[in-house]
Every structure is written in C-alpha cells, then in structure tokens.
Amino acid sequence: MNWKDEKKRFACAWAGVMAAVKEEVHMRIHIALAVVAIIAAAIFHISRMEWLILLLTIGSVIALELINTAIERAVDLVTTDFHPLAKAAKDIAAGAVLVAAVVAVIVGITIFLPYLV
Image (cartoon, rainbow, N blue to C red; front, side, top):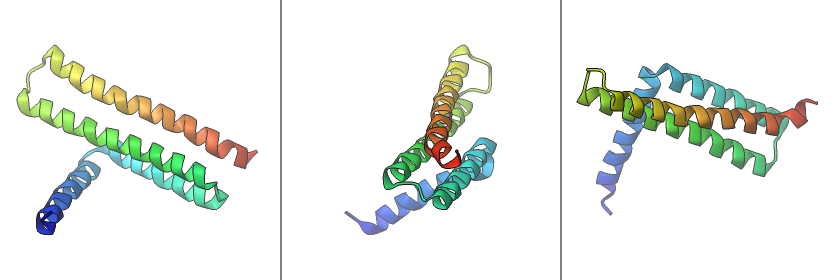
C-alpha cells in the first residue's frame, strides 16, 4: 500500500463530499439535522447502542444523498434532453434517499421520545 496514493484518494473522496455540501441544498439540510440529532443525543446522554443506531442512520442518509448526487450528475453528463430512463434513474436514486430519511425520522422518534416524556 502506497500511503501517498491513499492520501490522494482520500483527498478526492473528501473533495466529493465537500462539493455535495457546497452545491446540494438537501445535503446541507441532512447535515444540519444530523448536527441537531447529535447535540440532542449528547444532551440526553443516550445509550451506547442508541448512539450506534443514530450514527449508522445518519451515515446511511448522508451516504445515500452522496450516491443520489453522483447519479444525478452522471445522468446530466450523458444527456440534457428529457429521457424516461434518465428521469427514472434520478427518481429512483432520490427515492432511496427519501426512504432512508423517513426511516431516520422513525429512528429519531424511537430514540428521543422516551427522553422527552
């Protein structure tokens, strides 16, 4: 393993994350809500297992948003014309983010509701 090459790969991956944060409103929304959830988790002193579930849920939503963004960009690179398959690819990728976000809300309610009542 060449550490110099690995450092370059990490830098490229990080640049991709930063590009998505800079250019995608939904990514910024997901990150803002993740920060709120992490602050709430720290305030309520949630259990280790709850932390693991929360972090995995946050990571899933953000990872899927990154994949969605990559798919949208790749489709836009291939065609600027309307095509049903291009629309389907974008809609399906967005649907994956929607499913993860809905599950994240359910996880958040399940974790935090007992601390609020």
